[in-house]
Image (cartoon, rainbow, N blue to C red; front, side):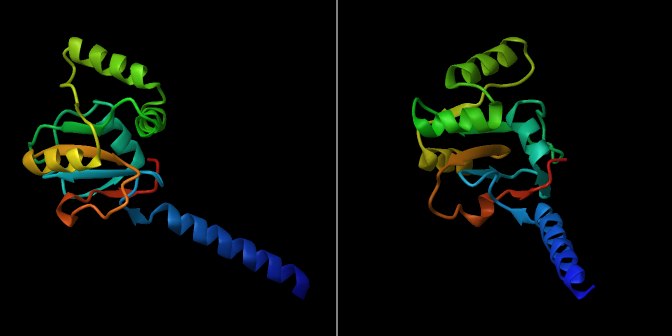
Length: 153
């Protein structure tokens, strides 16, 4: 009987650990992608909400500011990773996606930045901007940090 209790307690502990880590607040969208923002709603976002914002499905923040998306996006491997991870498309597929939304009048086009530093510079100048950094090694400024819950809902 004692030998059965030990594996069960280990399973319960691991299950609780996985459950609580699902709701941990983190700044990273994935291990390689960080989301940053300026004067956006002060709340914690789920991964699903961030996906909706980055796909142009939400045009205004609750605080009244217009959503402006800034993507670290050019023709390199980091941009390929961003395109696959967020949009599930190629680089050209993401460009076509945004062209379609803009020509349908559904949203404004994102600003495409050449590198992470340019994303941060653009964000500091624009209220309501949300940006994507890929493989950023430093810690983003605290005023640009976006809280993301690991929950997908």
